[in-house]
Image 1 (cartoon, one colour):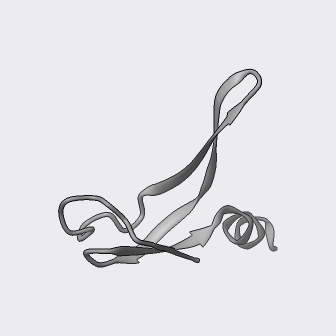
Image 2 (tube, helix red, strand yellow):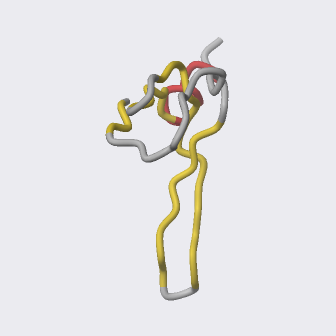
Length: 61
């Protein structure tokens, strides 16, 4: 997956393996969930593997 248009003021170098979280507003306040893991990035975008792909890879025999 691609997250484009990042506003992080520095390079994303060194973020590989970091978790990606998704956050949204709900009637109960802000909620967040694990969305995936960063695999590479540059100054304006991040590529990451979705959590569903990671879970499928982890549970395969």
